Image (tube, protein in one colour):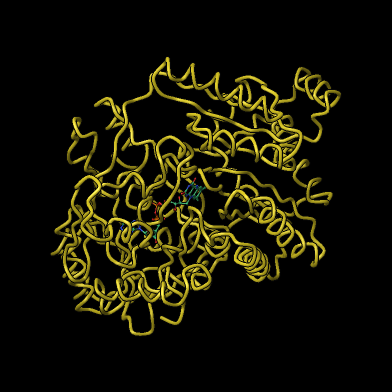
Amino acid sequence: MRDRRDELRWNGWGRLDRGFETKGRDAAVWAFVADALGTARLPSTPAPSLEDTTLPACRAGAGLLDALARATDARRVHTSTWERAFHAHGRSYHDLLRLRSGALEHAPDVVVYPTSRDEVLAVLRIAEDARLAVVPFGGGSSVVGGVEARGGPAHAAVLTLDTTEMNRVLEVDGVSRTATIEAGIYGPALEEALAQRGFLLGHHPQSFEHSTLGGWIAARGAGQLSNRYGTADAMLVAARIATPRGLLETRAFPASAAGPNLNQLLCGSEGTMGVITDATVRLHPLPEARRVFAFLFKGFDEGVNAVRALVQEGTGAAMMRLSDTEETRFFGAFRRVIEPSRVHELAEGALGVAGYDPKCVLMVCVEGATDDVAREVARIRAVAKSRGGLYVGEGPGKSWWKRRFEMPYLRDPMLDRGVGVDTLETATEWSNVSRLYEAVRLAIRSTLEAEGRRAVVLAHISHSYHDGASLYFTFLFLRDLAREVEQWRAVKDAASRAIVLHGGTISHHHGVGVDHAPYLDDEKGLLGVDVLAQARKALDPRGNMNPGKLLPPRR
Ligand SMILES: Cc1cc2nc3c(=O)[nH]c(=O)nc-3n(C[C@H](O)[C@H](O)[C@H](O)COP(=O)(O)OP(=O)(O)OC[C@H]3O[C@@H](n4cnc5c(N)ncnc54)[C@H](O)[C@@H]3O)c2cc1C
């Protein structure tokens, strides 16, 4: 089961029949955003239609298309404008700018949907012979340029290999609590199939509805419940990856000591080493109970200390999401524009009197066996209280949970109104969280303010560990319509430089792709990057797999 591609937006987020729900308060919502960005009125900047968008000429000749059809099926080999445009880019802000530009510089020459491991291997053999660049494509939700359809100078054409016809659960081992699943399955279909057997995987990124198991592993992602279920690399037990040199199979031995763990080489390989065709992952019993509740803190540092205590003391939260004061204020006000409520107003007033203005909200989710949940909620409340947290119940948590996959639908309407909105993330040790947080915020804000734009910069802690946490930034600004890509690049560069200079990782869960590749040397060192380059060479000697991604540009 998968979304039909033609039910999705080719140049935006998600399904055509869904959008961001403003409950009839459109005018008020856009007046609020305009006001936040310091302008009286937002411009109208609709996206050109596909008919009004030009693509580079298709370089796939009849001989190549015939060979691909023989290796798969003619119905799964596509050169239509829609398929080429849909697969041209991922879904970052930079990608959307290009998809809305009216002229695509990059697009695959051909899109193929194999249905099995053997078909993938056959397609890779054809690509070797014809010297094609191959871009593995799952949900296409990459936000770092990971699926950008481009080859190198030596490539005759670009083939995008869409994995979503490989979407079966192959085996569930209920005793070992593992399942072997094909890589192209989307999040909802995967969890639905496992739930029928009483299990869940628990990887729920915000892109859950439109991203795939293979993409989660290849980009080394992290879901919203990572405190309980782990990040994608922790879920992986074994994988099969089709490479230009044949199939590489890692085996499912628990805690093998037979040298370095090859699974960890495949995690984060971003399509540069081959196509993950299926993976064996760890399962968990379906939770009997779930509670999502919130605390307020008087400042971000106070909240950070509480999250650190909660994770280091081993409380059983599945998720802890701490918003800074700007994010708390912005989304609180935004929500009240959509759902005005006298009760909320009074509650806000009372919190102000009690000293919680400004404030930071911490959203916590606990799930599992009913008794465990009750016990952990009590522990979490006690630890949070001892760190200055004010328990505000389950109301905010419930409404966040209900809408947790909805926010991405707000980005396209923002782009239709001249608003730029981008996100980035990093992670660092607890002792460095405050410093990095301030440095990245300053870098984003000062770059936009230098060109006379008011920036709304929001941040939260999205994932937390024994030794540190991730920081996730969202920023809104008025686009400079004459130079929107340059404007984006200036902010991205400033933020990336601040991250590497102040001790953050260049990616905590979005991956590296094209956008972060120039910064990989800073993180891994020249020798470290060379180890990765040599591993890639062993699997893909001619450099056909996803060229230009992950490794810094020189290689
Ligand atoms: C609105 C939005 C919210 C997001 N939220 C999160 C979040 O909460 N957490 C998070 O981790 N990420 C998030 N992301 C980023 C993105 O969803 C993740 O990177 C996700 O793991 C990508 O999965 P995908 O199937 O869409 O992969 P794609 O975008 O198709 O591909 C991602 C990378 O993996 C490679 N790849 C894909 N499939 C395979 C395969 N089978 N074998 C080998 N390589 C492959 C591609 O070549 C590419 O380099 C978000 C993105 C968006 C747009």
